[in-house]
Image (cartoon, rainbow, N blue to C red; front, side, top):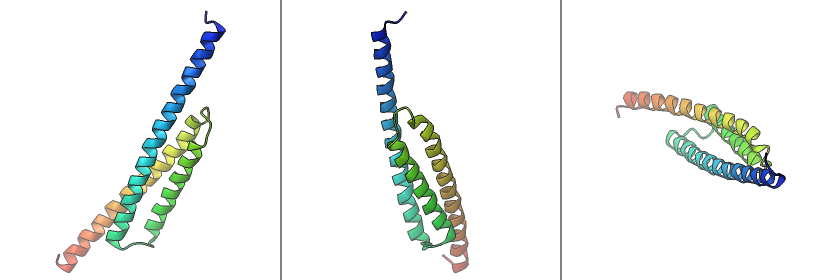
Length: 118
């Protein structure tokens, strides 16, 4: 049987581990969002599509993912795991929209290159 002091120590270790996991997750997600944000900007610059519906959708989804991450960062140690689900969903939607935009843009650019003789 655990002594009360041992239980307290175990709880403290669990909290420290959760904080470390949260910090690691936040760091990785911040990196992903910075990277995809730069890729979106680069793709928009290459295609000249600064205000198309697709790019507005990408920017909106990027903002949603950033907001979700911010909320996760400011959440309690106990609540962050639940908030992580929303951040993962926002990331997944952003990544899918980016991949679809990138694929569609690549097809459009290759058609342009063929029709313009490049």
